Amino acid sequence: MNRTDPFSGYNFAVEIDGITSMGFKECSGLDSTTSAGTYREGTDPTLAMRQIPGLLSFSNITLRRGITNDHSLWDWRNSVANGDLVRRDLSIILRDDKGEEKIRWNIKNSWPTKWSGPGFDATSDAFAIETLELVHEGIEVQKW
Image (cartoon, helix red, strand yellow):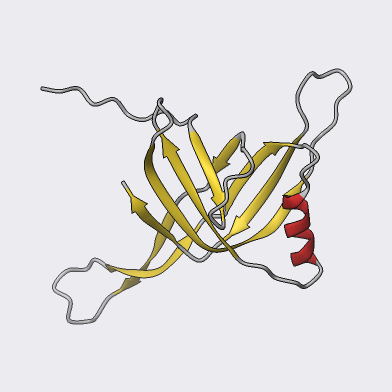
């Protein structure tokens, strides 16, 4: 029997509108949920409630990276805050240890709902990290 090890979670890339121009320290929120509604008719043979699928929802995607001179994430969030909503597609790509693409999740019509700047502590040697939260309208798998 051949052994298949899982892929590591540290080797990933994020493409925004097909461009991989920035690296991220962390990417989270890749999930979907279908709500369940309960229903029962008086003629149901059991006293249990039926569980019926409801609406599909998606969690926010959270991206974290060290702050540099590149302020494009801030600019994108700021444009939304000023009433200029720009939706962008993005891809989250899981790579193997050789850097080859293994899985690609495509995120549709995302836009930044929250930007957070770094916390500051003069006694720490931590890096300044910015965080961007994105809402979106769906996840699809392009490659697995």
